[in-house]
Length: 118
Image (cartoon, rainbow, N blue to C red; front, side, top):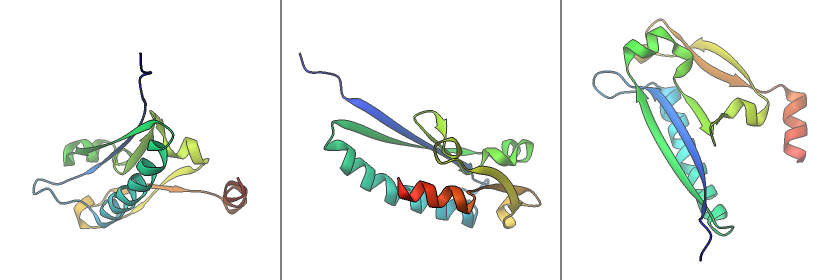
């Protein structure tokens, strides 16, 4: 009997307004995720690992309640910032987001140098 293929799930969620638009930051993240996902999918398939990309939207009401829920990425159920040792922050974004400060993540330079060596 053939072993069940392992699956790596990447989930991304972001704000979309009533006309389906998102902010530039989320749009850029989406493009980056698509590019990285295709590369990862190809590389992991050779190891017998299936990859899935789930894309979820949150509405303006949910965003206003907690702006840090927009533009979030999880890999195998863990937030991206946990995988890479990043800090979560906030900054102004654009008109789709209104006056809310949107989610950002940052990595200190020392950690980034260490991360790139591995």
